[in-house]
Length: 333
Image 1 (cartoon, helix red, strand yellow):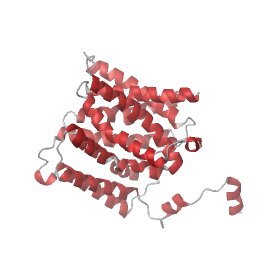
Image 2 (cartoon, one colour):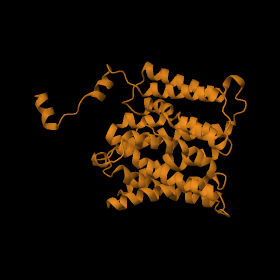
Image 3 (spheres, rainbow, N blue to C red):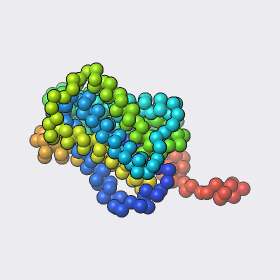
Image 4 (cartoon, rainbow, N blue to C red):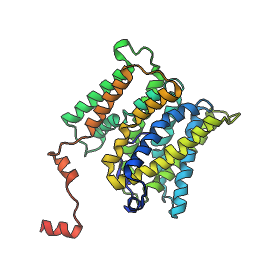
């Protein structure tokens, strides 16, 4: 799971969640990093017992159940309106159905650690796309340098100087395509659902419900029903959905409220580290010297694309304190 730049709809409407949170935000940040870092290991184990589409289906199903439980406890309704549900259907395809399926298919032939590193390219794709699709993201030398550095890191991970030997091209391409789906989806959400009055949990719960329907249809058409339900693959899919998709998103919203989106999305940079460690220690995956080096270069490039000069117009706007409306009018007067 990627943690790309969160759109306005991903911000909780109030700060009450932050005030009632018992655990320190640093502990929740670490726990969230571990959950999303282990997601790639869980996908790998899940595909040992189920077809890739079925792994993705279980992921969104149990994720939807987790968020619907939260909505039930809060007595909060799902979003209303055909137009909203239509946009959510597209968002479900781009943010859940497609990337979850692609990662599952990718891990049939590549290591979970490599899939986690490919996931770290999502901020790079996002910055490249937002420069074109979003007017507030203007190209700068620093961002161009970050993009170039990040994709140099990708080539390092893949061992470009030795002709990509030892790397499954198809699986790696599927993982990179899955990472590209996230920023495309978030840009679509920011353009179509930014003013939707529903809470992020309600929107995401509805989105996962729609993704469940999409994957039910795809699974029925292209896969056969599982003949058995092996223990570890089944537990992996349940954990992937309930924890990695349901609980993790709920925790992410709380972190955004408490420490802001910039700090909260830093979890993205810990995911490949944890995914690589889990794959090597628990699955016995081999790690060559260029893999961690390339991953570090990717993360450095991604971090560089997210920084804004404090003296720039955009940087001053980002750090400008927000005054109450009445006081703003007095200042203008």
